[in-house]
Amino acid sequence: MEEKCLLQASFNPKVKSYWVLSWVFVSALTIVGIAFIPIVAIIVWMISGKMLDAMSARLLERKLVVKRGIVFVVEKSIPLEKITDVALIQGPIMRLFGLYQLSFETAGQSGTGALVSLVGINEADAFREAILEQKDKLSGDKPAVIEDASSTGDLAGLTQSVQNIEKMLSVLIDEKKNG
Image (cartoon, rainbow, N blue to C red; front, side, top):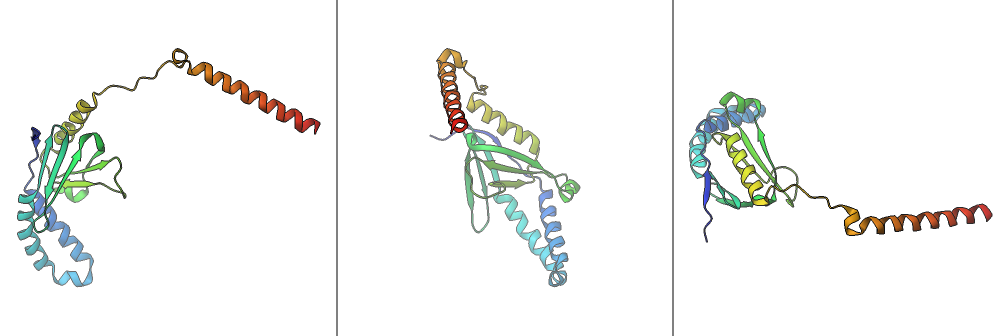
């Protein structure tokens, strides 16, 4: 049974320029890379269009499906109930192009950092809010209920345990004084 697609992300074409500028900047930081800046810029520009076309993010009823890659196509399916954080990030170069990065972290993921990051989603804040709203709908958005301990008898048992500990401590103190 195929889940219903609630929202399909679209990507800003400015992300191509962002990728080119980022690679040019990295190349400029290396002595050897400076000579190859024009070649790097052309190659990244040509590849970035295909990369952008290959990227997709779909919000389904119970999961987020992210697909990207040209040579090695990677499709990740993230259950919404496992998502612990959806970060909205904008660095200085991203700000120049009006782009945001969405980073998804999940419960139980190994390693540090985001499980999935997407740069250049149009209306990234709205996409983030849609994910969080759907996650809340799935969880029922019910606040945790703290039961009254006295109604379950736990308070009486806890009180009895504390009294027993106090008696044992009293005996130990008396033995130490007399002993």
